[in-house]
Image (spheres, rainbow, N blue to C red):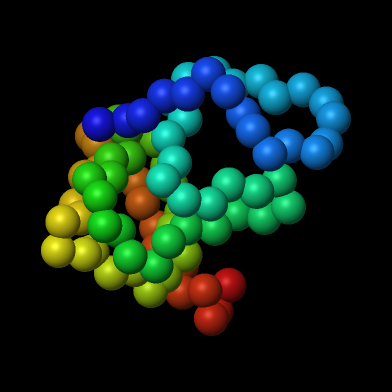
Amino acid sequence: MPVFTTAITGSTGTGVVALSGTIETSGFISSMGVGNATTISLATTVPKNYNSILYGPITIGTNGTLTIGSDSAVKIIDIENA
């Protein structure tokens, strides 16, 4: 179940933050890079009609799941070879 917030805190920069569509995170978001956790520990879904890249290796934890929606593709790229 996603958690929604109406506030962004801790920012020292200036500019515009424009969000639309579905944005969910339980980890890391950066304007200087892209990353993902090495262990999926929550229910994680790639929506239908999306392409996604994950950097691996990836482990699915005891309480984790990875669901890939219809007409979607997920590629796991070994971070050592990226």
